[in-house]
Every structure is written in C-alpha cells, then in structure tokens.
Length: 270
Image 1 (cartoon, helix red, strand yellow):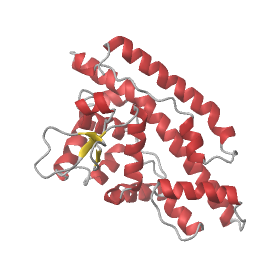
Image 2 (cartoon, helix red, strand yellow):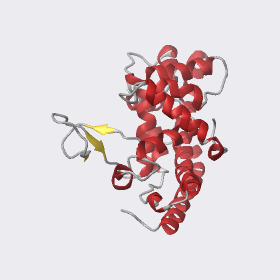
Image 3 (spheres, one colour):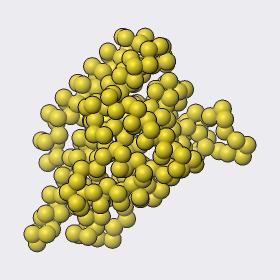
Image 4 (cartoon, helix red, strand yellow):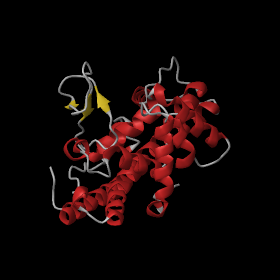
C-alpha cells in the first residue's frame, strides 16, 4: 500500500483536483434528472485510492503541510456535496412555505436524504425539512483536518494506509475491517476498511450529521446558524465529546492540536 512520497502525493493531489473540477461542472445540470440527488453528486467524485507515504517524511513541518494539502481538497469536495444537498432541501422548504405542492420526483429525492441522514419523518413538511437541515450541513474544514491528523497519526497509521480509514471508524461484523492489535478480550469491533479516502471522509461527515452520539455537535452548529454565525472548528469540537472514551481529555487534545497547527490551516476555517 505504501508508495513513493513525492510521486504518490503528486498523483493523488492531481486526481483530487480533477475530481473537484468535474464535480463543479456536473452538479448544476444533474439535479434535474430522475436519479436521486445523492447518487448524482457522489457519482461525480473520482475516488482517491493512493495515500502518500507520510511516515517517510522526516521533517515535521513538511509532513504536516503534505498531510493537510492531501486531505484538504477531498474535504472541500465532500462539503460541496453536502452544500448541494442542503440547497436542494432549502428550495423544497421554500416551496412548501409558499403553499406549493412538491412533485413526486422531488419527494422521492427528499426521502433519499431522510434515509441517508437517518431521520425518520412521518411526513415531508416544513417541520421535518427544518429538522433535516440541522443534519445536512457542512463540517468545518479545519476540524476535519485536525481530527484526521489525530485519529490517523498524521496519515501514518495502518488503518489509514491499508483501509483508507482516517477517522478511526469502527464496524461490528467479522471481516468488515482490520482487527486492531490492541483489541481487548471479548471485543468484536474492527476498524472499518473503505474503498477510497473520499469514502472515509464522506462516512465520517455522515456519522457526525446523523449519529445520536453527536446530537450536541449538531445542536451547537444549528444554534450558531440561527444567529447567522458561521460555525467554526473551535466551537464545534466540543460536540465531539462522545467520539472517544476519553471524552473531555479528547476535546482538550483536539483544541490543543488546533491551536498548535493554526499556521497550517490558513486555508481552512479555524
């Protein structure tokens, strides 16, 4: 799985940039087709399946820059998908507020989004769409970068290299992932294997946006939105208290990493 540091990094970055360009070109006309909006948007992504050999970079500053530069466009791409989904929901909400009836195709696409973000709605109405919007929202780039660095050991962990898993996500069926060497007796979890890096980022964002464990994260973000404030990493990290068994100590560690790496996050929202 390891590849040459310079060659693999350049190739992976080029693939990501091409994917973002393709995504921007394809997004607008695609949403009018019968296919579900989620599938349309995700089909525009070119999977990134090569990870640079970050462990081979001895200079700490160079390693951090390389890691952030590798992941940043992938994160931006996944946030762009969420923004398009959010716009789609907002448009439907506006139509309902104006007394209009949504056509079957639009209702079907909304049901797909309800399923994706694990929100059970009895009816598609103003109330349920407002609730859905609390889940379908972007995750600050700098927060994703810092948590990926923390969970993957700056991209050098076995799970990141072999399973494209940058966020330590678990799965619970035999063979679904990589068995951690430190797994305790009686434990059944494995570290999930993804088909690509972008699939890992997508899963992580969907997890934060749907899992009941991160209701506080979504509540903080929605409260900031209601005040017309842009949610930032230093505010939303507090909503990750259930991401680790270490809880408050984990939050302190992420905040400390955010502060110490601020100069590398100049292109992100800190």
